[in-house]
Amino acid sequence: MISSAFLNKAIAQKKNKKEQEQDTLLVQSNPNFKPTLEINPYAIEEDKKKRKKKKRKKKVFYGIKTKVRYTKEYSRNRRNVIFRKIHVLKEPVKPNMYVHEVYFYDAKRKKIESTYPDRYKPEMGPLLHGAYERTIDGILVDRGIFYKGTKHGRWEKYGNGMELLEKEYFYRGHPKNSEITYYDINQKKVKEVIPIQYGKKEGVYLAFYESGRIKTKGEYRDDIKVGRWYEYYDRERSNNKKETQYVNRNRPYEDEFEPYVLREWDEKGQKIVDNRKGRNR
Image (cartoon, rainbow, N blue to C red; front, side, top):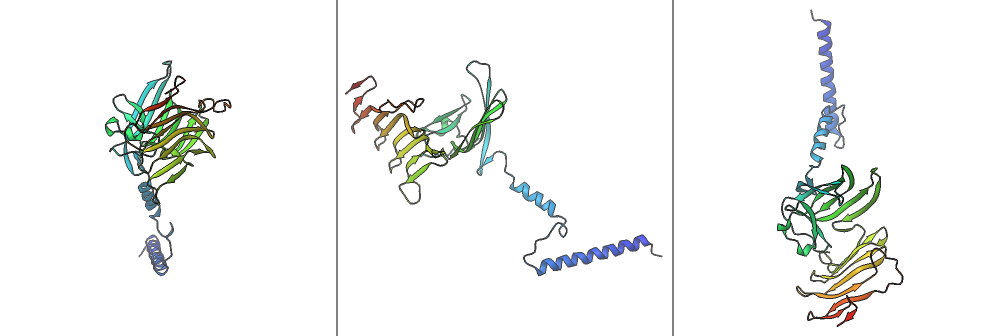
């Protein structure tokens, strides 16, 4: 005699088989049908696998593999320890020539350094690329991200209580909202970069010749030209053309200050003006 437990089990198996056949028929007859967890009991596991595949690797930024490096230094009074955690490129790349500066890791000095892009050489050290953090005595003070040696994305500064003090946005070396014009339709040859932050000119201004050489360089603060502005000739050597002194960058609202030419050179490279000590030539 067949026991009731065995009979119930057989009925349940038959019912499950019938439901699976109905589910299969439903899927085959409806091309737009998406299986639910009830019909596809393995959906949770498949979803987990997909999420694992999509999860970014810790040392890969913008599809490029990097290496982690650390720097350590002390404050001027030697009381505070400053740590930096950075990522650097594994393979050397040519930096963007249309930016003001690029950052690299000097392995000999174990420090972060910066230079003009046309002066950078791979033997100086790998370019910074990826997440960046700076801490003082274990407290985070600023963080951001680099893209092939240039500041990129959101950069933040924090106070002692981890309150956000300042934030800036960059796109591959320029303030994110900068106004950039080009010589060509393909936007490969940059003509001018006007740095814009929060609706005002703020940062380093750059202008280039069609050859790619720098034409003019200077700094804006709150829509005002500050510090020294430089003009260059379109050539490799002895390219200095004019150096103009604008209001002190720390006192941009000094109304009485009048800009003046500090130094100037002719096309032959001869200096024709030198006002560094109040004299003309």
